[in-house]
Image (cartoon, rainbow, N blue to C red; front, side):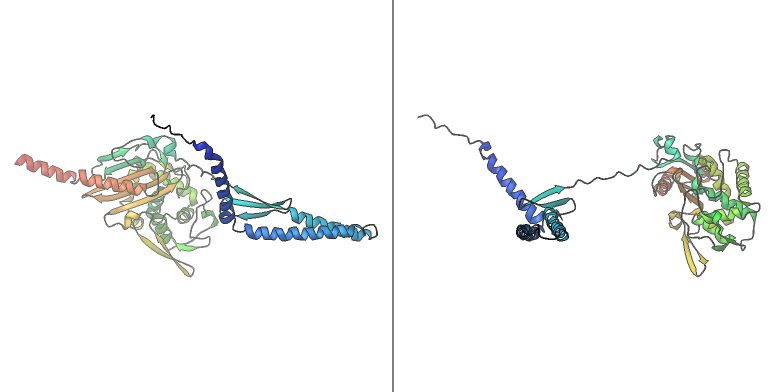
Amino acid sequence: MPEARRHRVSSRRFLPAFRLVAVALIAVYSTAFLLPEAQAAKKHEAAVAKKSQAAGDSRARGAKNIAQAPRGASAKRGAKVEKVARADKADRVVRGGRNVVATIRQRGGRTVVAVQRRSIVRVAEAPPRLSFGQMAGLNHTEDALDLKSNAALVIDQDTREVLFSKNDHAVLPIASLTKLMTGLIMSEARLPNEELITIAQDDVDTEKHSSSRLVVGTTLSRGELLHLALMSSENRAAHALARTYPGGTATFVSVMNAKARLLGMKDTRYVEPTGLSFNNQSSAQDLALLVNAASADATVRELSTSPTYQVEVGNRLLQFNTTNRLVKNPDWDIGVQKTGFINEAGQCLVMQTKIAGRKLIMVFLDSTGKLSRIGDAERVRRWVEATHLMSPAARQNVATAEVAS
């Protein structure tokens, strides 16, 4: 006999049953989990409905006496009935989580529950402002060390040998690297360091609205202000130094520009003493000349490489810290340094340091990220240690010894 034919049971036959089960599960989930207050709400609405029914019966009984009742009493009863009717139509909102909201309504003596899931609208953050170097496309320049700085220069201070360069002629805002020139001018002016200077309203930053712990009215010595300007990049301290310079701020800025020309800084321009203005601009080549001059000044060397400093302001003792964490790193031997940052300039760093027995000048401009300039300095140090372990004199001695042998 032929094999009995098997009958296939289509899953579509059970589709209505599946839908019914799904609806039931949703109803149970909404009542038991999303709406923990639904049961209490139903009881409350039932009480309101009973009260409304009683009010309706009362209204029916009082209808016979409306013609006889005073007009004022009738108005009061009407207002009361209307108030009860409004209570019957009132909605109750129950939250079942951050995004789930349920509304309970009375319709025809039945309780209707409407569940709504609210969508979350996330507002995208504004894109970061581009620096001048990024707007010029310098960030697309590739280099062998994969530096994050868009302009960089590393030279041997003694021989002027260029070990590394990247967009070193690009003229860019230099932010608080400006204060290195400010400190050099003040040091060379030989003004009394003990002279007291009071922070004035004119010293408050109206360019970037930066904060300061030196409130208006704070009085410190010129030496203390110079220390804070070079070590912790205190804007009000730097501005107060220029303001109290003989001839005022305008004269001080003109002296800064004259000093730059004297040092051969052809691409450099200063308009104020703090670096808050993006119109203070220079190149890595020019800044290397400034670092070289600043490293010859004992005062600038000492104050710029100080890790911490305390000043007495009124009855308080305020401690300030260096803006360059490499100063506190025992692996680094830094002779002079300065950091800087504004949006237009990016993260900046200049240093005179000793690596593998060689005195080097490092300039990093327009770097992205708070720690990127430090990371660039570390990359350069490892590279120098690996490829330039000996000074030129030592290499010459080795070459001479090899020839003699």
